[in-house]
Amino acid sequence: MQSKRGRLDRYLATKLQIHRKAVRALLLAERVYVNGIPAKALDLQVDEFSHIVFDGHILQANQPIYLMMHKPVGVVSATKDKEHQTVIDLLACEARHELHIAGRLDLNSSGLLLLTNDSRWSEALMSPEQKVDKVYRVILANPLSEEYIAAFAQGMYFAFEDITTQPAKLVILDSHLAEVTLMEGKYHQIKPMFGRFRNPVVELHRLSIGDITLDEALSPGESRMLTVEEVASIWPR
Image 1 (cartoon, rainbow, N blue to C red):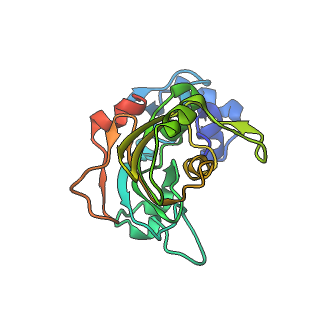
Image 2 (cartoon, rainbow, N blue to C red):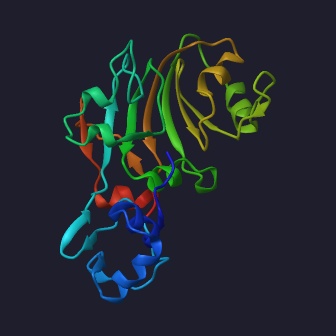
């Protein structure tokens, strides 16, 4: 989802249904306040969370929302779906239909899911340049061996998609249990990577994204607001 950031004069012209040239007079008369300060520059950058007041009337006062959910198996990471229950359906938040998903999980995966109405934050979260790591617990159908570790660390080429995965860290916790850390999330890549060894994934559960770890107090389907520290760990506003 793209950010709604743009120039103040363009916002006011659209919102007030006036010509952009008329905005200058409003600013000179100090009739417009942005975040509690009289706006003076036509090209002032505002976004969907800028508090904008005109002649004492609030034009915009949106609040950013950041949620973590313990996504259950069988629920779709989507805002709408004709066949399955979606993660949005599980939310009690009044503004739930304004939210989008930052880093999806497939239908049969569970664990940490992040939702927000702040497109700049979610873009930072998913940007390859940020190198936000994602940690998964994986249960396999067949036993693991040391050769998996080297293969994941080297990255894998998939001819059909014509991509090579970034190096990933794999830690063997038990004969059929592994922890995988990714710096990317291409096309549900964990299952195809284990598929190279003809070892089906039985269970895939996301434990963390960056410094945000799934709250163990949350049962599947439950959610809570992120703390200020958790939000800032991805991208401080």
